[in-house]
Image (cartoon, rainbow, N blue to C red):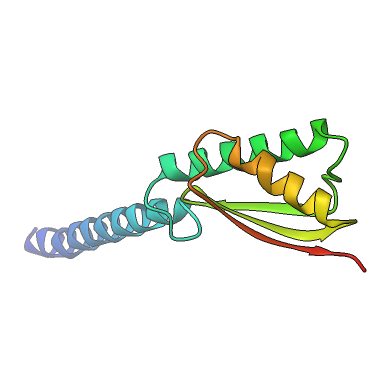
Length: 114
């Protein structure tokens, strides 16, 4: 009978350690759900909403080719990149971006095609 009790104890201990290790891994993995070093899931959702709103404004505007301009948002800072056919398209894209709620700053890296 003593043999059974001795064998049961290490097994319980191993199960406890396995459960604890699994919990730690799951907690760490859930913290990785937010990408690009953002502070919270809420900030990520806000940035996604800003990017979507900017792209929607580009699609609605006939002066801006939404396909040629990329929009990325991080903590309210919007980065515009890609190519514009002229300086008017470049400045219109920036102007439309500033009109979206939540935009804190705009980095306009759009290149004008020669």
